Length: 593
Image (cartoon, rainbow, N blue to C red; front, top):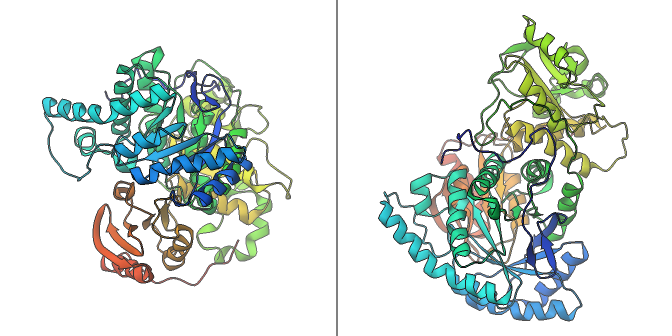
């Protein structure tokens, strides 16, 4: 099955919101899918053997509004303590459902299912030994592998069916099996096929209380994988309408982690996809909950449905083919940089320090750019631009009363590709300097990031935030997170959990301080090896917990330095970057904005 198949469809209308119809899956006292509100969940970071700490953290998350809480269970011994954790949580009067996070150990999953309401398994490493081997599988060998996996997975399915448990079949881009990698590659299609293998086993046993996830650290990969999964499930038949768990894995911390999560999760929610979400931040887990709640609240409804075909392939990223033109001595369109616009008012506010603003400076003033502003529903206005002999820069009018994503998708579908498009984060600019920044950040990331990941947009402007410096910083950070314009070091940092072998928050901060000036270098910071090698296939260098107090360093997905004392590891990482010719000395610090 090719992602280019013209018959694939993941959304009934790309210009009008409608929520995907899924069956109901029950996790303890929580129902997801079937039209129920999107469920917010998170994961504790305490050692699963520490009952008191785990119970306290579960209660804290529940108090913050978390509806499902996940706990890692690395081995059967860890899984056995889930009984004590569950009893402690219930004794405190809390009925929040618990989920066991399982990766390599089927016996741990079997034990965990006795005590918690849901078990998450990762098809890429559950019953699979990942060796990064390159080999060709004959159809017969492939079927033999599937038979072996069935022997390991079917008993868990039977137990969950008997006990009324749920299962999440959770594929991660960073941990696909060798079998999948060699047949489908490290692709969204490979992620989907990996999950479907396990789903078929569950269905053969008449078990349907399961959900899917397709998590990746790259929002483009994550979005394409979920879209492809939805399309494939629809092709399989109406009874394959299982709920979906959304998440960007290793999103990071601070604004970057929130922006990346909003791009990946938010764009799918905006298309009606998703029944439960987890925002993965390299911070205390309780900080994930308000971000997830705000994303659910920000889902745009309505639209501008019209009989027009989209001009982009939603299953494979390709930037819209506009032609290059100059705007105020800067090239824009084609394969040129995605440009950052600002208003005249904001430009004037920072004009005195533009030369000291480094990579965060504004590039073009909105009012000086000769932009054509129109309503994309107005066919006559769009036709007039298309018939013009000039290359134009076009944007959507404010106050149209339709969602941003739908409006710009409609514009891109009607406008000749040669004309460039300026994206807006909102069609209702803010004049409230005291408004809460988080909803603004999430909405801008959702709207702009979704369109950029569709390949739409040659320039952007953020006007939902009144503060000049903050709106510019947000503009550039969205472009970075969407992979459209790399202007600083890129970090893939996993959220902490009970598997973590060092303090992720402190270590990530130390690595940022040591390497934050390396423009275009991508560094992965992983607490353990569960997703490390795979996720680092997209990174240049990796810093991974190998054992308590010991760090392994990677180049790409290849380990090159082993068992480095944690106190020396950041400096050794710098040395490794130097060895590979990617190190530059830090410049003088730019003006803070």
